[in-house]
Length: 182
Image (cartoon, rainbow, N blue to C red; front, side, top):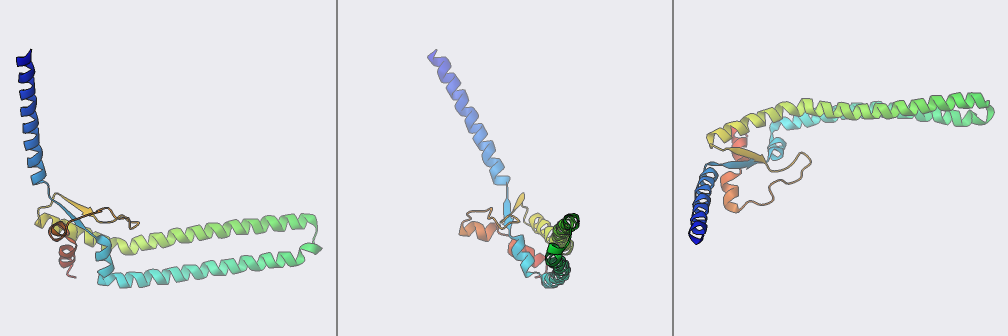
């Protein structure tokens, strides 16, 4: 019984040793880099033109919204002024009409927000494609297995810690900017 237990334990230890060696080999072959695409995007010369175009687009849309709001407010004020002298059925119709106008105004505002997001994607998308191409080139040149983004699209940090050595060795942000001729 003791012999069998020792034999099983030895076999188990050998298995762990082989698995550990194989795991260490996989870890040695795995190369991970990371990059901050937002930092690159903010430094791209084309980004200033994109920001200006987006700002112009947003100002135009905000003016459209302001015009619609003013029109709605004018109609509400006119209704309030004549409310005391019109019949109940006329009041009801006017309130329904103003309610409908208010709903249309809210829909218009939501539509504008969607249009601004689409315009932003339309303008920034090609720049992000350039960054992704440069990341792929740098990753291939450095023989990296994976490249991580340092932050989420909301700005939340993904890489919580990287030693100074790791930052120098695995942060490829500068190499990507060089690839983009920045």
